Amino acid sequence: MPEEKPERFDTLKIHAGYDPKEHNYASSVPIYQTAAFGFGDSDRAARLVNFKEKGFSYSRVSNPTVAVLEKRIADLDGGADAVAVGSGMAAVSYTILNLTEGGGRIAAAANIYGASFDEFRTLFPKYGIYFDFIDDINDWNQVESAIKEDTKAIFVESVTNPATTVADIAALAQLAHRHGIPLVVDNTFPTPCLFNPIRYGADLVVYSSTKGISGHGEVISGLIVDAGNFDFGNGRFKQFEEKEFILGNEEEHMQRSFVEAFGNKAFAARLRLKYLRLFGAVLGPFEAYLVLLGIETLSERLDKQVASAKKIAEFLTANPHVRTVQYSGLPDHPQHELVKKYFPRGVGAIFAFDMDGTEEQTKKVLDSVKIFSYLPNVGDVRSLIVNPCRTTHREIPSAYRRRGGLSDTVIRLSIGLEDADDLIADLDQAIRTAFA
Ligand code: PLP
Image 1 (cartoon, rainbow, N blue to C red):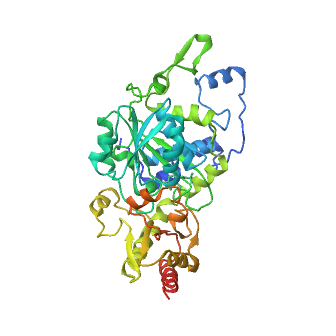
Image 2: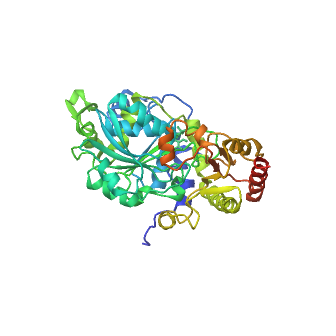
Image 3: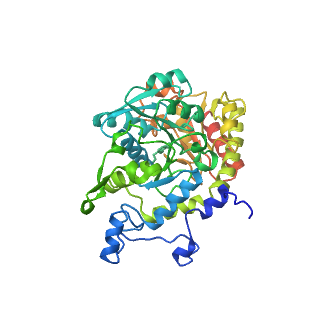
């Protein structure tokens, strides 16, 4: 018998998690637009609710269309299980809550997405969950000193927004595991196509699939992938080891913990049964279908977008009005070696640049572009432009922004699928207008 080779990314992105035989041989994943599913008979109902038979009963907990998306992202990332939720922020929030329930701390990179930072800094502390922010996530002394007795995880973005700083995930995973805690990676910017955090030791991966994964700027959605490698029964996470009424069976006087009931899938199972089922930020089947459709062309989109981004970054580097281009994909970037190690296919199509000018001139560029859309999103087939400090990153106090090298005049670009030369011409005329 020839040895069966695991399928590669481009095959998985089209087929993983979907068996047409189970869906009337439909070639495209059907949209199960239904709130509930019949139990069939009372014996089957008993088996379903006691987890003795797999199946669907209510779409707040699971739905066949959403389940295909969950299996597909788990397979693309090499994880054991995944949960889809209503937004990237729901993915971040539920992951943190599932880790820190009852109180605790998270050691987190300071240069993360504005809403995550705002939530960590101003909202979670009201629930007894505290954050130790790290200015340079690749400085092991800073990371070590942020880990305290009740720290439950390290949280980092693989590629930051908008400066595209890259985290050394393998080293961070080793450090986290030495302290008996998991590494959580927000991998939204590179998507699983450009980077696989689990391969380098990450335990949990979160996504805003609103961005490059779906790729068309039409659906708010989030994903959490559980690598299935971290032992949540290690004594640091009592919520995973306590006996749960819902996992028991009153008739048989039996109760189990999430670790006992779900083994290496305990994190994803608990997130689904506690947070999705009880807090309820569920992803609808139609939205899951749109994300699945986007994933089918993920590699093709990103390959072109990365190539165009490099070309545009080179044009900007040579422009006399541009002071800096913040893009770790450029060969003279200080992190170039790290980028080569982790991102052989490119670090992404989102980056920032700063001009030798005033904030008025930044505004003039935004108001003069004709092809770029001025809006607060990234990872679209349309090219996007924004002034982060006045919009997407407004939630981050200026002291943190400055420490992260983000000035008030910086402009972020997200490169789409238009012709790269047209995009360059558009930026060229907008910059010339601003400096006329
Ligand atoms: N994480 C990152 C890195 C993001 O850029 C975003 C949104 O921009 C989010 C999380 C939140 O995602 P959503 O807007 O889907 O809630």
